[in-house]
Length: 179
Image (tube, rainbow, N blue to C red):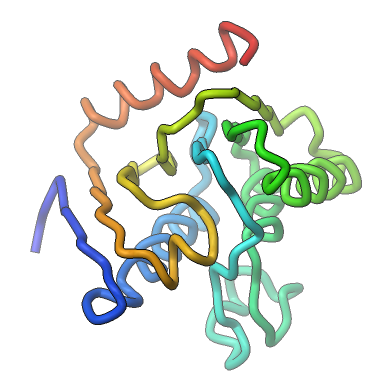
């Protein structure tokens, strides 16, 4: 099946794991074939969510250092940067985001990747999006446990090059105006 745009409505009773699986596929694609352009995570609230359940070792070929455990967002993002993709994070000024931002900044610095990470915090940010080389995920969901597991959400996954380019221009404007 070939599609350019897909809408997913998630609730406690429908499509429970579909968004997590989509995020996994998006990040696996980026890890296996890193892009030349900056990846973006844009969300008012971001947490160090579990992205991969590697307790059975199914993702060990992607990164043998992960071990047989749950792999969280910070580890995946650090690995994405280590493989050559610059990363932009745009989030709100809310203190909820401080632990993730602090831990990601430290992980990037410890890995010698600080120049690959750009963080912008905005007071009125309400946009939500994950933009990688091959796809854009947008919609109502914040990158939090509640967004993935609890809340009813509607997301759109898009692979159209025009849509990806428009999102990239908009997200890159955070860099141009300095946040």
